[in-house]
Length: 213
Image (cartoon, rainbow, N blue to C red; front, top):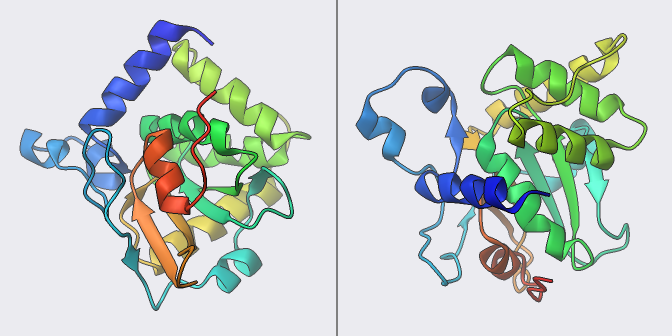
């Protein structure tokens, strides 16, 4: 991984923590500058308590969404991440989550929020023999300005899965990606967060040790 592009990626993510339909289309500068996040962030500080939702159901996400897993299958902490393959803030979260992959299980769920390419690339990642490796290759390609993963073959089944993921995302009235869904470590209540988080703040949100190595 090249250091300079990665630093640039996180610098961009710091300006706007999430992507939305509005940010994908031409918009007024003021709208583009507003962060779309459920918690207040500050440098070096843990995120504020995430919004609790009585509507979002982890059981439903497990049943109806299709994603790929990174981390121990028996991890005590599980977080579901709705992401768009074209979203740079989702890329930032992908890299921020890597140091925590032994501490929590991440389930990455592709949606089509930004454009048609989002759907086909999400389908290609799901269809890969090793989706996590495909995601790594996709993010590296984006960072090198090569456009990301190139879909190959028939992807009807996984394109349908991305559509279904997007329908679920919309049903819960999430407005931006990445969106994280997990359970509060102390109360067990479902909590959500819209927007990328640096590794220490992500660890604090999940209630796991931060191991940036």
